[in-house]
Image (cartoon, helix red, strand yellow):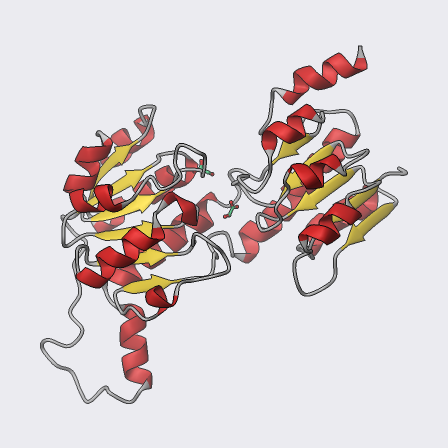
Length: 331
Ligand code: GLV
Ligand code: GLV
C-alpha cells in the first residue's frame, strides 16, 4: 500500500522484511546513531507510522509534527520515552513489545545477581592483570545465594520470570506488587509483602516496575536505609526508578554490599563515581539484547504497524483510551 513508514534505527531484518512486504515506502535510519530530536521532528512529517526506540524521546513537540501518523510502535516493552497522553489526544495508537523479551531480561537479571555476588568482573580483571598466583583460601570471597531471600519489586511478566528462576538457586522469594501473583506463590512459595518488609528482609532486591511518575525515585536514601547492610540492589528496569546519587552514596559508604545495574538515570551517561566502584557490575542497557528477543521484538513491532494500518487493533496497544478517540473521529 501507499503508506510511508519511518524506522528510526536499523532493526533485525525479520521486522524490516514485514514492513517492506506490506508498504511501499519504508524509510530506515541507516546511520550508526540515533536520530536527534530535531531530525525526529522533521522526519515524522508525512509518515503514516513510526517504529521507534526507547532512546527516542517522542515528546509533545515530536508528536505535534506527526500530521498523518496512526501508530507509534515502540521497539521496547517500556514506553516512558513516549508522551502517551499527547499521542492519545492526537488519536495515535501506541504499541510496545511485551512478552518476547521477558526471558532475556530475566536471564540478564540473574547474570547481574551472580556477577555481583561472586565478584565475577573483579575476578576477571584480577586475572587479566596477571595477579593470579595460585589458588588461595580467601581469594575473592563472595556471597552464597542458597537460603538467602530474593525481594522482587514489581511482579509482572519479568519479575515473575526472575522469581521462577530463584528455585534453582534455592532462594526464598518475597515480592511487592499491587496484585497477588499466584504463579510465584505456587511455584516458588513466594510471599507477597509490604514495600518496607521487602526492603528490610531481602538479601538481593531486584526491580521490575515500569517507570511512571509514581515509581520515579522509588528507591532513595530513606528506602536504602531500610535495606540490610549485606544486601545487593539489582536494576534492569529503568534508571530513574533509583535515586542514583543516593545509591552511589550508599555503595561508597558500605551502607549496602553492592549493585548490579543495566540502566541509569541519564543514559547513556554513567556517573564516574559508579565506574570507579568495585562493588558494582555495570552493563549498557542490554536486558533484551539476545538474538532471539531482538528478532521477536522486530517482528512484533512491525506486525503492530501492519495491523493498525489495515484497520485492526493489535493486542499490545498501551493507550487503549485512544480507541474511543478514534471511534469518535470516524463517526
Ligand atoms: C527495554 O528496556 C525495554 O523496555 O524493552
Ligand atoms: C514487563 O514486560 C513486565 O510486565 O514485567
